[in-house]
Image (tube, rainbow, N blue to C red):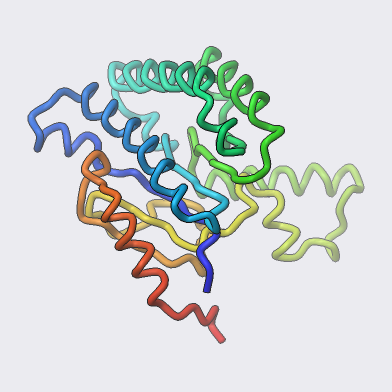
Length: 231
């Protein structure tokens, strides 16, 4: 059983701010830095070729205007940092953003496109960033694409099966392992179609506290499990 695709639900930034007695800005910045650290740690596992981070959910957009403004400013800063950083080029990593990106601020949309374009030639590994993402929304959007193709005679009902449906999703790849931090033991709508046979690992630490040892423990737990896929 090989681990090729790993996904993260980096939860607990706000709760960490309260516990640590720091501002929300500081906590979110620690959280974004943690994502960079995780990508560095994953370099130790050459067989893991796909990594996915859920950065912003649809429900997150229901937060206060002030918090959303803060989040978007941090996203902009991180996107600028990433565009100038040669990490993805050095490691042959393609970065992709998925979700209802059209609803995000124009500046973020433009920077997302710029970063995707700059890394699209790399094929060694892929990092997916889910922005304005929700699992139910993903399935609804997939259904809309299917209906459009059906109306345009690009698809027949007989051709539609589980494998074909998967290709209409934001994420066609099924993660072998999903890690959620903060001690919350649910997926909260993350990749509901693709995660049917994913192994789940719930870490009690908040995302800014997540360590390389925690990652190793999650991967060790995965390697100890037997995946039978219902057989």
